Length: 80
Image 1 (cartoon, rainbow, N blue to C red):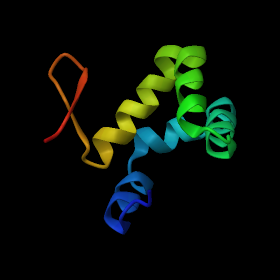
Image 2: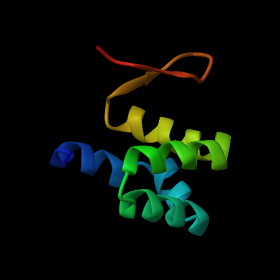
Image 3: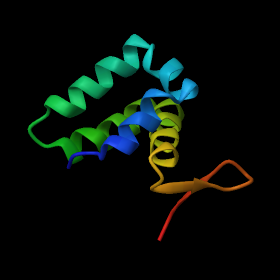
């Protein structure tokens, strides 16, 4: 799946995401998921292994591109 240019622009201007992406460990996790033969399985393994930190990144990414909204309690829910 390819993100539209508008979504990419939102990601590249989101300071919270940019700060998260400076973490070398997160970069390594993303590379491992991206390079895995079974990305879905690798993503689930990363979520299990990295827990709340990785989930916070995923949540911020999904909210940023407009797939999810953030509730007042901080959790996210899918739009649509």
